[in-house]
Image 1 (tube, rainbow, N blue to C red):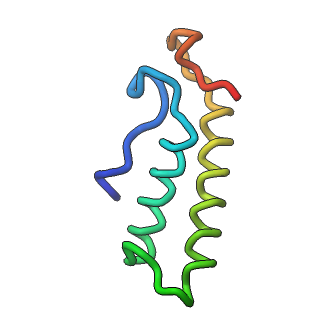
Image 2 (image 1 turned 90 degrees about the horizontal axis):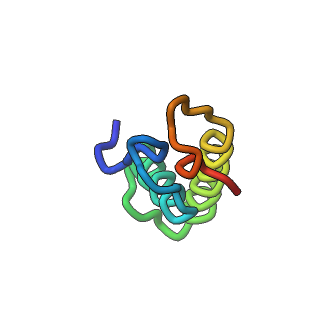
Length: 78
């Protein structure tokens, strides 16, 4: 869908994904889906809320994934 969104789980990402990594991926997703690189002032609130919600859902997904064969230090922890 969007080539600038990178995989955030091991073993593709050898180190733990940071909150900044998760937020950047969420922002890229919202930009792609909405068609706006930056929202107009009247859309800013809904745009930012979508980024926040997608970042939270992404963090929950990464926290819940079980990556078999991954080194324990590479598994995301909070």
